[in-house]
Length: 258
Ligand SMILES: C[S@@+](CC[C@H](N)C(=O)[O-])C[C@H]1O[C@@H](n2cnc3c(N)ncnc32)[C@H](O)[C@@H]1O
Image 1 (cartoon, rainbow, N blue to C red):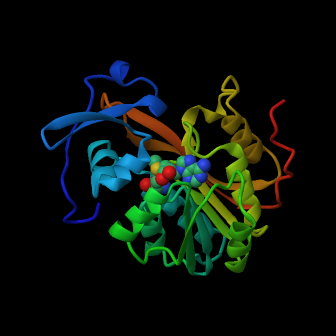
Image 2 (tube, helix red, strand yellow; image 1 turned 180 degrees about the vertical axis):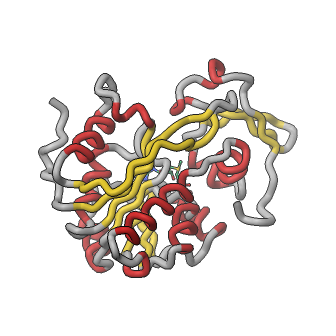
Image 3 (tube, rainbow, N blue to C red; image 1 turned 90 degrees about the vertical axis):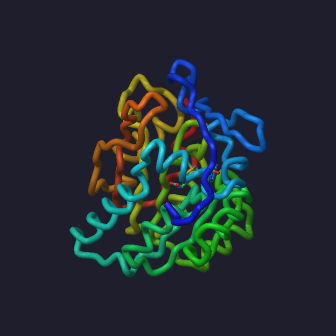
């Protein structure tokens, strides 16, 4: 939470039956005498209002994920006898920089953020200027030559993705492309809904992450179930935080749908 951020008049629906699935959840915001409904995934509208993202997800719904994922990454790196101060990190789905702020606490060497919407970059510049050494707005599912070239200059050896996998956010192809842009032997840390381990969950992303976890492309150093945040009803939503070492690039055809 950034001290002194603007406060908004927000209201949550009465129950999750009202709010539906995680990717369809919504809330109300009162502005200038009017009340309008915004979905949790209307990131452009949320980022445009200073402090709204923090007030909704971090204060009201007590999201703990950036701090959790940064801390398991740091402890895995340290236990492997390596130093966080040498990490050159790509933070995918960086939003307005909350994960970047957590990673800075561990003194990482370089920090490059990326998000698919320009409103995230605008909010970053407004809320946490200077947190990232560079910030790319683009789509990792179809990276442009300029993105690939720019990222190549940073010699990245760590990928983080927090609260951005699944539920219509970062698709498997984008995550795998980002995974393949960091060096073999580099670190990967992310979080994902706890249902991803359930084999009845056939969503492409869940299958991709299961395969990564259970094949030789990622050596798992830390896997922990924890409370990601509260639901609208005040019930805990559990995720896994995962940190590991990349062993090799994932072949581009490996995760295509059967
Ligand atoms: C819930 S926010 C998480 C932001 C930040 N990581 C945090 O923990 O506060 C999800 C972010 O993922 C971004 N996002 C969604 N789809 C994406 C994609 N295909 N590529 C990159 N970012 C994406 C959204 O724009 C949004 O900023």
